[in-house]
Amino acid sequence: MIDTHYPSDPDRVRLIAGVADALALCNAAQVPVIVVTNQSGIARGLLTERQYQQVRARVEDDLSAAGARVDATYHCPHWAEITGPCDCRKPGLGMYVRAAAEHGLDLARSAYIGDRWRDVSPAVETGGLGVLIPSVDTSQDDIDAARAQAYVMPSLGDAVRHFLATLNTSA
Image (tube, rainbow, N blue to C red; front, side, top):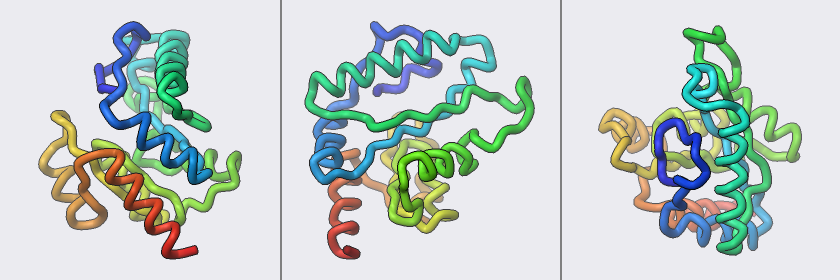
């Protein structure tokens, strides 16, 4: 989804070009697609849990219409300054550990893909594959960190193809 910063309106949902095709590659390879997202706007009062769920459902509907699916979504609604610290907010591993337990995933054989270092950095701790896909909101520090410790690729399709190739060579 194109980042609208605190997405609260399902009518503003727009998929990034190529995302559905990339996820469909994972679906066809029987690789679970799990979304892990920080949603501090809930704690900050910028959107409600209901609005977030409506946006999530819209994304999933749009993906389905394009022939792709997300197998599960985990979100952190917290913001430490308001709700206190939590173990789920990225880059923490709480949501990843929960997803791994609920879906039988090996975190070391998982990909951590996003447009911020906090999305990718859990790969360093888990031994998984980290791929940063820079967007207009990605800082140079995030890009530098990814270049040093993970990968930087131009699209989700490139990241997925690389990940699937690593699975095929390590099988």
